[in-house]
Amino acid sequence: MKLLLYGTRFCHLCKQAGEVLHAAGVTAEYTDIAEDEALFERYGMRIPVVRRVDNGAELGWPFDVAALERLTA
View 1 (cartoon, rainbow, N blue to C red):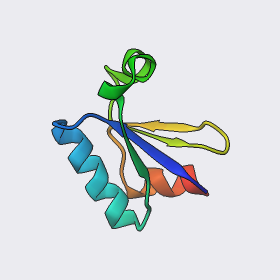
View 2 (view 1 turned 180 degrees about the vertical axis):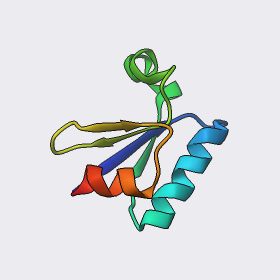
View 3 (view 1 turned 135 degrees about the horizontal axis):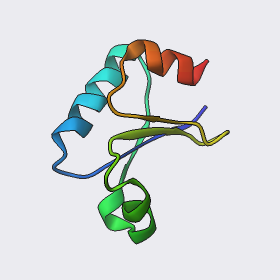
């Protein structure tokens, strides 16, 4: 299953989200929303957000390892 992590370059919460992903043993493709106007409009106030590509399910910050496990189950 493919996951995307939406964030921005200097977002300290996005860095923390990456650490939670790592702790959960989950990999996600990072997408910088600042480079896409539509993504910035959709996620600008919500980042970091993890999104499943296959079904569109999203998990917004704050989240922990258990929440990631539920998202990926």
